[in-house]
Image 1 (tube, each protein chain N blue to C red):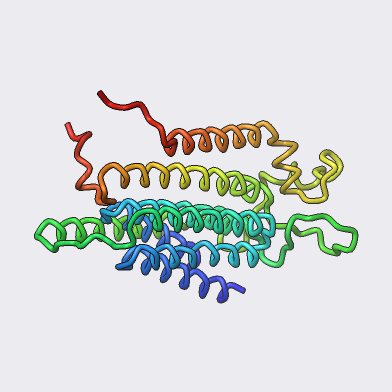
Image 2: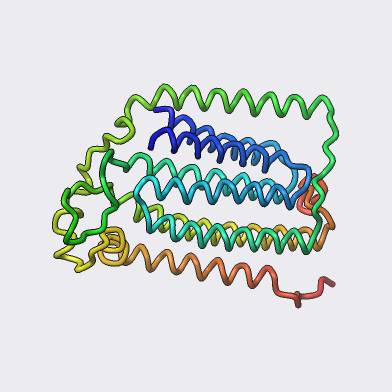
Length: 112
Length: 177
């Protein structure tokens, strides 16, 4: 159980970064940390003690595998996470070029 | 095994906290690398070698992009002024985080304990998987055979993101009148 708690704590560290930091790069880092902790949590739930990776081979004696379904889902999620992080960073560098800062308080042109 | 996992998770949490609190953006990004590469080791310990391979590639690419962004802008972290509002915000987020942790702790009772996962859902994928898909690796069997359309959608998302990045980063924009 302590492993689950530590994973959620990692999620909360990322959430703290997103909520309280004002630098855009720090916010992107916080989002990425949250995403990593969710991936790790899904894999932890699918783990079976004493099992091997779900790869069939002729010399595998025990047929006890870890769950392949969370692994397949997380594999998709990792790649999509890379795409979203790259898009966020591209927007961040455009904002820096326009405003000269990463501070989200200084970006006021869209303020109503 | 479990203790090793706890040590690596503690290292990841330390790296995450340092990364968010660092005064220099370059060291923040390097400390963020601790989290990603710690995740690679955790995947290896949890018997997920495919994920470890993908994660190590993705983490390297993310670090390269982040360092490129920082080298093209500034390394300095913003100077935070400590006012009354800052303290209120930090206390509010800490209270919210404590509440979240408490609720999660209460609800973990519904989960099966670590390492005692019941394979109800994956039985129909595991047993006839090798004969139906012809793949020795069951994870690739699920991704490219049972969930082939999902993988097609994933490729669509990836290319859409690439188009988005190219659109945002293109040098010539329309001049505002």
